[in-house]
Image (cartoon, rainbow over the protein chains, first blue to last red):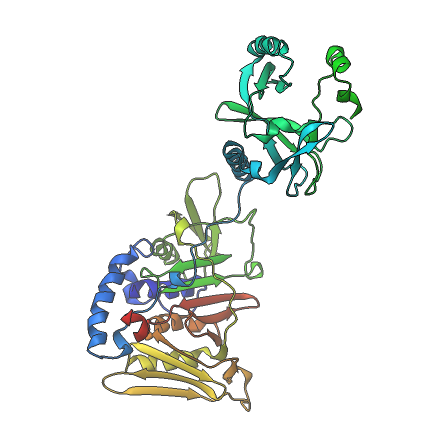
Length: 240
Length: 229
């Protein structure tokens, strides 16, 4: 340890071509940085406890460590890639754990039935909620849709979308605690837009804020279905 | 260019900052941390002669080593010394900003002598500073040395003055052994600045030109009270 500090000083002096001549004990070849501090420290501690008990005074008392005062600095600078990765991981956790569900509340509207309101503010681009249900391929979904159409009581909770040139569907017909399925439609003033994200091979349909959303606002997005047949049946698709 | 290193027992820390203006030529494309063993770096630096110029060179794409080029213009001689780098990621400490209760400036040589005198009596240095003055005490079995400086407002030479700013009185203990190592830097600077606060590391700073410095941080000794715990 003594060698180390001595060396520090001499090194620097040398560097500046200063007058100080290198002292002889610089020759000692101790590895400066990598010595595990624990060994030296514990040895010192045990010896000192005995000496202080015999009241030999402060002379043999060891010093604190500088690391008790100054923390090891992990660089806070990150590459863009790293930041993206972290953001993606955070998003994945929020989606998988459904942490945003508790930020939303169900309310009843006399015309529209159930709707979803936010109990918090969202910034533009924020992840709001996942449209969660059973993910299936288009062909399978079409068969199920056919079955559903026979039953008048079943509402439309099937979300068709395209991802990587393939058609998919999320069937959220079954009642569940996931609130994404209850969000109403608006083509004129939506505050959410849909987005597909992929984690570890599985993909999720999520709703993100299209603009800043204030606490208490109803969440709305454009269902997107514009086929003549459905519009005829559901005129609200184009006029709300 | 900044340098940081700790001693092996992690009691002391050295921090060197050299302003860009100090260098004849300086180029650094982006902030980068280079890890070197001080032992190996001192081997490289010892190859230099007193009047040599030294160039440090690191190219990101050229492996994990740093080249020290020593040039002796008189003899048209250059010497390239290549030193392997090491991973010291876990060794870099963040030094928080600290308002020190006491800041004392004095001639560097004066501080060196005070420490040397005290070390003949004691392993431990006590520094007590109040508005009235700053006292360096080394007490040992064979005797003691007590050096008292009263702030000198009347000193003729600015470089010889001992100045003292005290916001709060301090009373701290350090290992004198480290202090003696620090004072080897006396040749760098006429003045030394001590910044003190109770229960935090002392800063012993040697200014280098305008904004550069060589700073030593030394953790205080463990109080008896601490030891009882």
